[in-house]
Amino acid sequence: MKISIIGVGTVGSAVATAVKNTGLVHEIVLFDRDGVRARAAAEDLGHAAAFGFDVKISAVSNYRGIRGSDIVIISAGANQKPGQTRTDLLQNNAEVVRDIVPRVMANVDPKHVILILVTNPLDVMVMLAQSLSKLPPSRVIGTGTMLDTARLRTILSRGLDVSPQSIQSYVLGEHGDSSVIDWSGVTVGGLQLDDFCHQAKIPMTDATRETIEYRVRNAAYEIIRGRGATWDGIGAAVSDLLRCIINDEHRILTVSVVGGTGAHTVAASLPRVIGSDGVIMTLNPKMSSAESAGLRRSCKIIQKNFSKI
Ligand code: NAD
Image (cartoon, rainbow, N blue to C red; front, side, top):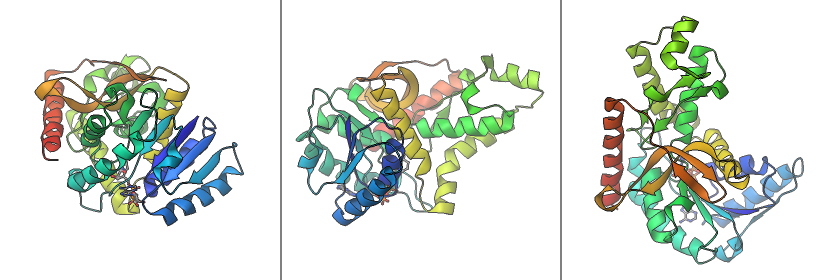
């Protein structure tokens, strides 16, 4: 299994580290328009690999080096600076994706390759990459709200004193400020959230839910304020998605892929079954009317932003 990472900044490096540590790939190729940065990352990661699984890590100076890749991860482009939203990156990163995708496609097997998008604003970049690559939507996958979902499960886990592994909950829609929590679908150990809270004697008021929503949506802003960027969470999310694809696990992850037709075409996150061919099936979760309205609103925001590029 050969994977390539395009854009080896903070996030690309974290992705490479997390992927290397899975032991599931035999070769990782790094490309960045800043060749010095890519070569330095390959050196450092190569040294780290000497302590773990055998994996060949190299930097390449042109796209021919990615030939034979099964999966290409795009993590290039500007990141949010403190105070910036993901949408502020729209025009800059659309140019980055327009630069990268045709070069990638000229050097991979279109019948086989899977593209994973990480660059923000994520959903719009998925739409752009899918239209440029002409690949089936099921093989152009954005990490979507995987990270937001992990943040929700972590926050719930702390409040409920239960492992995140025992909490099923999804953040849907935009990977951005309009994301929607599917409260109607939250289960803890198979119990509806309210039933669990009743049994555990934990209050779950509307105010508590609003606080949780605020913390999920603002997690990235908080991390960027304190750390300058986010990288560990997204590195883990990409390697989890990769594991699901490589092992054909058919796990359900909230990734973003293009769906719908005509004016309704949009990439947004819904729970989807993932396997070796990419997205196998999309689920329509049970939602309240307010949650459904929130999801429609979120999709409209993504479509509007796509129309600007
Ligand atoms: P960074 O500035 O540290 O690195 C970006 C890298 O992209 C740089 O090394 C730069 O040289 C390279 N690059 C830019 N244009 C390029 C091009 N045309 N071809 C090849 N390489 C190019 O930024 P970062 O912190 O690594 O963030 C990268 C992206 O990931 C940002 O858009 C950020 O918002 C996004 N991100 C997404 C998530 C998510 O959940 N999807 C999470 C965190 C960050």
